[in-house]
Amino acid sequence: MAFLNNKTTQSDFAANLKILYFITTKCISYPLFIFNIFFDLLTKNFNQFFIMDITTSIKFLPNIYAGDDDYEEGFDDNLVINKELGECFLCPLCFGIPRNPVVIKKCGHGFCEVCIAKHVIESANHSSKDRGFTTKCPVCSGLFTKFDPIGYDEFNIPSKKAFNLIQLKCPYGCSYIGSPHEVDDHQTYECPKRTVFCPYMDCKQKMTYEKLMAEHIMNCEKLIIYCESCFLPMPKAEVSTHNCKDRLAQALKCM
Image (cartoon, rainbow, N blue to C red; front, side):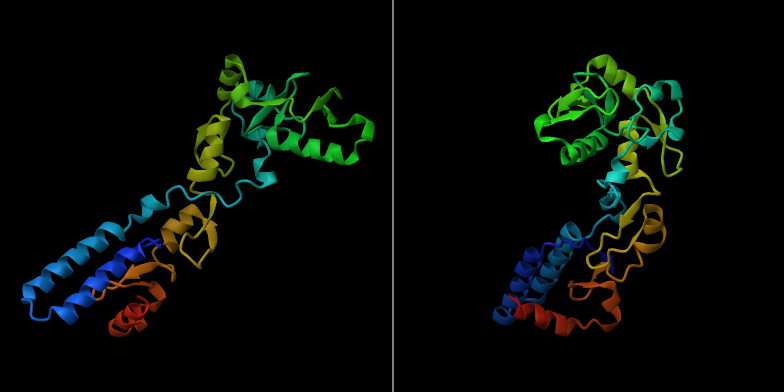
């Protein structure tokens, strides 16, 4: 058996199956070597389109918690290595180092993007009508609109350099160290201790990435493999009950 991507190009297989059906029904008088050539080409087609390098294709499975409000809040200041520099960028709402820092232009106070966004929404729900669309800064109470905060891309060059000099440890306890943006990407797409879903269709078990690779990925019952006799894909759980003749007949009916 060989391993297949779940998103197999079924149209390519259907085309090959139609050719096989045509040859076997219309060209039965052709020499046997014609069939051998066809099956060789069919095998190469499967190898080209279906066989996947599992470790490469799922290397960057995203953390399932990325995007949650709690996840997007700042990094705990205990993770900061150069604390004096880190304190210059602490968010006064979550007391963490922002993943995505923003600054209110009018007063210069900085926050996490997600924290100030929640503050604006909460303030709008409790504000008086005469304040209109303005919100009070959580630090100095100066009024600003939702359009006033600027993101990292609009920071001046010295501010960007200073922010990128902050060094953080990975929140999951691995050995990785980097700037806030680097640790954010690492925690989301690279850390072996991040929580991910099994990528196979209909499985969706959640576990750490390192457990997925070490124990689950090659043993998942939803893993798609293909039969070396009929070349049809099937879940690993169906190997013991797979019948090539029945599956080929079923496939032909679907054409």
